[in-house]
Length: 276
Ligand SMILES: Nc1ncnc2c1ncn2[C@@H]1O[C@H](COP(=O)(O)OP(=O)(O)OP(=O)(O)O)[C@@H](O)[C@H]1O
Ligand SMILES: [Mg+2]
Image 1 (cartoon, rainbow, N blue to C red):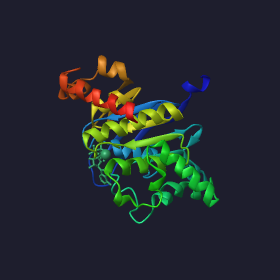
Image 2: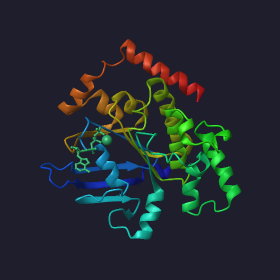
Image 3: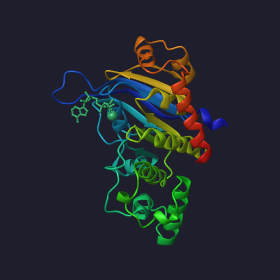
Image 4: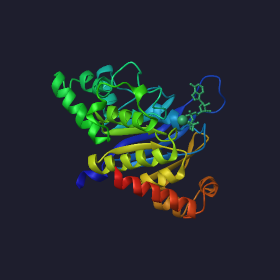
């Protein structure tokens, strides 16, 4: 268990300013994620969550700050280093309808990373691995030759998760991965994340605006407002003894701890966990 407290991701003083805007979209954001840990990032729409995620994953170049994965500096990485960093940090996006190329089969969607990174160059070995990945996310091998359009939203999100996990990333960055799904399906997909986290020892940055979702899944919670992190701490601290007034406001906006509705919702989570 010695490696568990090791820092995997270190974000320091991250700033993203878009041209023509007065305030920075991300303004001096710093946090760490340790190996095996899940950090939940919460905050209202437009506070800078997706921008933070995109800067970390190397999809946009921030105005300032540093991002380190292990010992490697993401922002000053060379082209070849960036390729291996991209493998190490995979993203799952909110909308499984636009994030999967509709023309590709599931076999190609999930197997693409294996091919690109030379992990399973041989066709049959790649196929076997894809079947294994599909099983891991709860999809049958008969999905292989089908295309995204013939799947439901929840199933598509499972395909996106299998695709992200195919290359064995060190960090999974999830940007509102259950927000576009219907509540009962949300619970199933969340349970899948929880199972995978335990099974694979995944480290995750998990963005959500739903505080119940973050409470269910995350060890650490960061609360973001207007581009800044106003509070960060363990789940129990942030939910049990919030220090910042904005965190208290967010918590007050959701049902009080453990009312019947919330109890029912958590019950749904547990029920589907048993069936995952
Ligand atoms: N490409 C861009 N050009 C200019 N401004 C942008 C761009 N992308 C985002 N912004 C602005 O940056 C701010 C942060 O946006 P971001 O998408 O990171 O927020 P968010 O917290 O992910 O919101 P949501 O919960 O709605 O997804 C917003 O004010 C947004 O309008
Ligand atoms: Mg967003």
